[in-house]
Length: 329
Image (cartoon, rainbow, N blue to C red):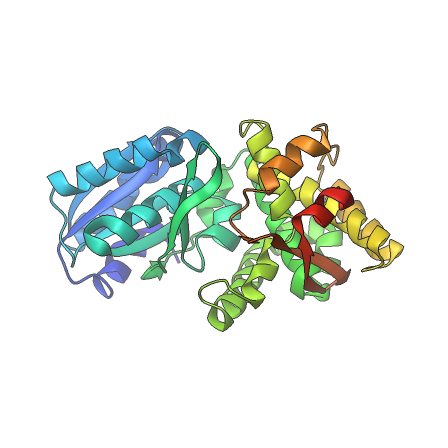
């Protein structure tokens, strides 16, 4: 679906007449005018709120600034937000929509591969706290997701690579055929629109089965517990996708040593990550990562659920104590 269809599609789900578009400074230059023009042509009064690129946009200050901007417009409960951007913008706008007036509609328009296959789907929204990533958040499913694959053509290679980490995750988690397709990098590039839809279908399947992330949906966190700790330890200088790639490789290694998967499964996971250029080196001390993981939002008292690969196409949850996690690291 093209970005120009946004206004028409929004009309079908938004009852009010005001929409605020949240984007970052990079995407603003590329797509904000097209986005706002489509909404205006559909009869909406359109406003914009632009944040800096990167994780700093998910701060408490930016969140409160956005809420104040919405109140000044003012948006009402029948109005909506549009998140035009990657995962950071989607998280910030989604959390603002979940909490402003106790909840208004949000429309996700992903402009990165990572957002298109993962963060725009399922309604997880959050901002970061000094203690860790995504520690303040809410479940707030989008009223509409508009995926326009042409918006991904402007992505720098490093941002595109971030998205490929999540794509590979879906293959390991739930689709062995997808994993095999990704192993042929050239073919995968030609079939990227199909791959995006395939990943979105997998995520929606898990979301529909476990909306509030208390059971099977937690499998989508493969590589994320360690990945989030790496992000935090580096003050987000290691991007989300690259941190998740490191996390998947490390979790595969741990799983092999614990007898949860074969040496071949671990090798194949690490090999495909290398095919897409990921550096799997982890330079942080285990104690540093462990201290951060102890604050992970998935912790349940003294226990934490780890996502471990059994074989390509199937993962499972293993509950361990926090102390056992430290020993595994």
